[in-house]
Length: 337
Image (cartoon, rainbow, N blue to C red; front, side, top):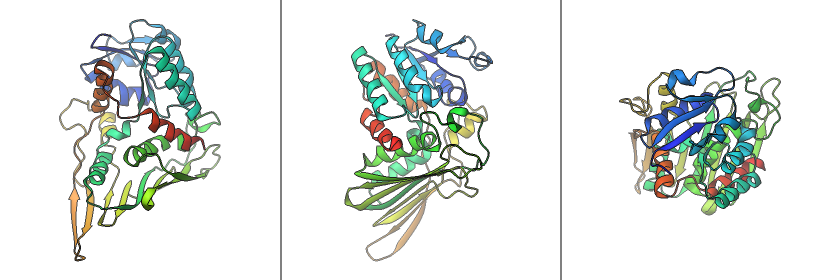
């Protein structure tokens, strides 16, 4: 393989246009070579010279492509991942990786047999807000943790137009949309839970799929982690709340990269991935004398370019990719339960 990875996107919706295309284009180790656009042809405006195929099969068959990004609707990930592997491509698969752990295990085994690599696009590990939480946990400042909440709330009362998220097809509903983000963050910090309890809800008028979930993850030493998401929250609570024997940490969601990308700001532009003032986390500590101290903790800048750098290093120099197969399988076991 060349040290420049020729890359194709299987779709050019929001995922390809915002979260993959700009970063692949910005990283010198990748060439954004081709995209599939079955209807309107828009990618050429954003990435002059890109090849636009009419079908995923045509793109997969292109011998000039080294890496394929499987960012098609959720229920097609399994089918398209296998096709790309059989065509001799490495693959980067959007979340959710598959509908269940059995499909995921089959894809991982197929890749090993064919000598190809599989990566999962768990982009929220490279968010500034989560990195601030991770830094606090790893610092040990909170002492032994007792209760942790990760949540992702929105207000979208109407039924969406994307049928793969609203119809009864594999890997559908809110738990397969936002659950992979929250579960991956929890599992990356705390590992696979000893046990879990999941609650799903349908609250929007006319919904066919879950639009609410709450999952309790139980860990050793009475560490309890809760991940929640809802589509009917008008006034969201903080996205990250952690309580330990020595203090608490509270952090709002930032989503700064998405906000900037929607405004046309590029990954290499000055100020990209830097949270605005007022988004700092609040760290409250208590010492042995019962004295409390409180400080605002700003987040370091973050960029999904770091994800693609990790992917590049794995492909070219065989370095481990942070999102492991075991973590993905643990996540899917919870989602499919």
